Image 1 (cartoon, rainbow, N blue to C red):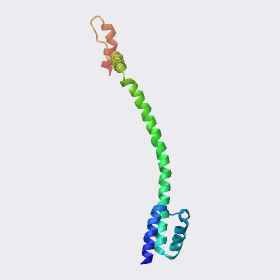
Image 2 (cartoon, one colour; image 1 turned 135 degrees about the vertical axis):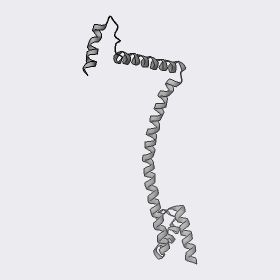
Image 3 (cartoon, one colour; image 1 turned 90 degrees about the horizontal axis):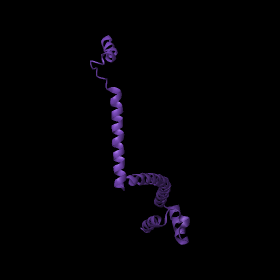
Length: 139
């Protein structure tokens, strides 16, 4: 029964102080080493605590890298919102941007319409339309 209490106390100390027994207070470290030497359960608990410490260290290392990536993404988003903020903060700038877009769309529509719409043949323009008519009839 005494070993069960010692194992329970050892498990509590592992949780509180970590698996590196050399960092424990001297008296507790001696007891822990003796318990690990004679008890398979203490060795199992100590091995689990060591593995958990390794996992936490690996996660902390990964968190630093992920934290850097998150900072880069946040910086890019901040700069993007600053640029959009410049446009949306001023009603005059926003209206000017909208009007510019409309003028550009209208100019593009006129240019496309001028290129793609065929000329209508009038009676006076029969000689201009005849090459088009002959091409249509040859096909």
